[in-house]
Image (cartoon, rainbow, N blue to C red; front, side, top):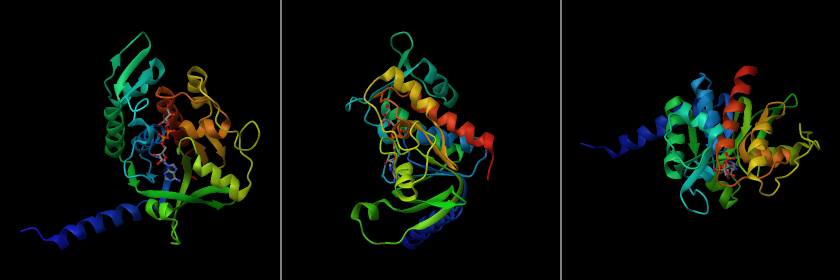
Length: 258
Ligand code: 48F
């Protein structure tokens, strides 16, 4: 006989255990788009205690909608290496170009990430960062719904050796850090340079080159990296996003924990 209270207790206890185990992380990722999910997967595969927070109900960021809601995406030859490593099938199109169903890619990235050990918290928003000794050292989080409603509810805080800003075009984490702390970033201007218009070839290279630690403790990946460092946009070609996530994960693994 099913007891409704046992069901509720199971959910509450399992969630609180997951959250409680995520208060002192090796890496805290903000944003569950392709770059954040790939970074989280490689970090979890390396044995890191890593959690990802996204304000939305569904994880996957901009992958689901393909290009203009045609739910297919393109990956070029370089990015296909990551797809191969993570076990994705794709269809060859013209030489050097592959297509994937965007629902397959989005759901597969989430599935791979969770199976690798990444803890994912949907419906949770980053509203601020923790600063210790002039270093980004954690996140201030709140429910995404509280952020949307703009209600005055105090947040909770977690510590992390590294924070990854994978929030896409708004580069939310870096924006908050610069606005509140006035820090200098490792960019051409020392500030947030801003995203440029469309040039897929340049943008794909930019995405990988710009994926790095821009302030002690804070890495950027994906479109956030281009927004922070001044890269171009590329639309629904995803190789750069995958390679960006892998690059920042490797950089954090090489640095070890703080
Ligand atoms: O934008 P998004 O998919 O990130 P990405 O990894 O990938 C970009 C591509 O999808 C696409 C593109 C490639 O051609 O240009 O746009 O750079 O996902 C970013 C995620 O971050 C979440 C947001 O809900 C989305 O799912 N996010 C943004 N700000 C916050 C946040 C925040 N403050 N707290 C929590 N989540």
